[in-house]
Image 1 (cartoon, rainbow, N blue to C red):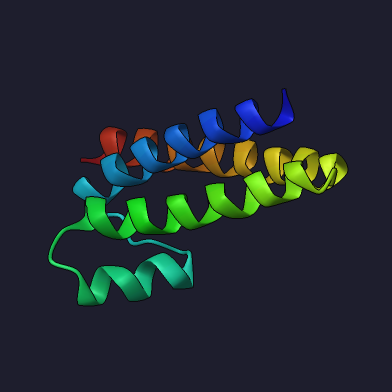
Image 2 (cartoon, helix red, strand yellow):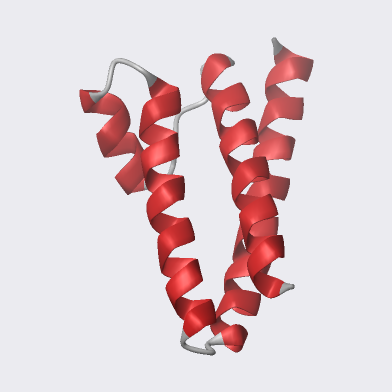
Length: 94
């Protein structure tokens, strides 16, 4: 269940990240920000990072590191919440 929740959070994080990038909000994650500078397509940069993260999560699940997945889920739930706040802020001021 933790792995499925991780995948869902990755989809939510990717979607909210792409929305706030369209609103002109800058990416705080240095890895994604670096890929955005060299990629002409933001969706591709976000997708590459998310695929890498999902691969690591699958490895963690396979090696029974469920507590690590649960902590990652908390982190990404906070990230999605932060993204939603940034989108709302941009929508209100924009």
